[in-house]
Amino acid sequence: MLLFYLGGFHNPRPHDLDLAIIADNPAAAAPVEQALTSSLGESINVSTVATREEATDLLANREIAGAFVPAGLDGADHADLLIASGSSVTTAETVVTIFQRLTQAQEVRLAIEDVVPVDADDPWGRTSSST
Image (cartoon, rainbow, N blue to C red; front, side):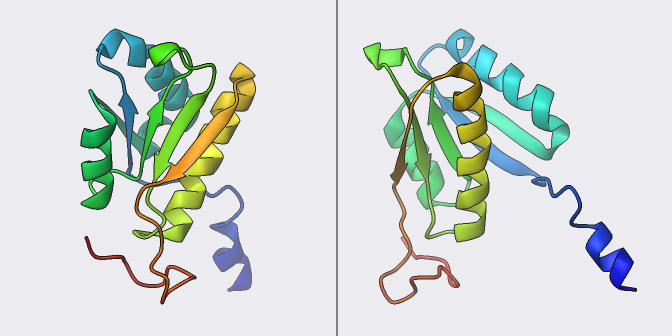
């Protein structure tokens, strides 16, 4: 019985993880979307949003798990990642891991911004923050 239980953890992957790429031009998001779907396949759903504000609203409403701004957009020399640990610490950590791997492969620095942090009364993020 223990082997069956542990077998499910040998290669954990996200399941139906909704991610966004922030780019005012969908063509700018295409290389990132292609890299993500080629490595994670159907375990993720990737969309493009035009602004950080739109991505922040989607994160606050738990419609996406993370939003990525590729390096080079707006003249930045690094990539940005928006997360919402207040919705789920585990999901936020998963999103960070995904994009750390992506940016390391690109040799680009990743700046992470938690736009919906865990509640001060719930430092482990066991309950969802309300917005």
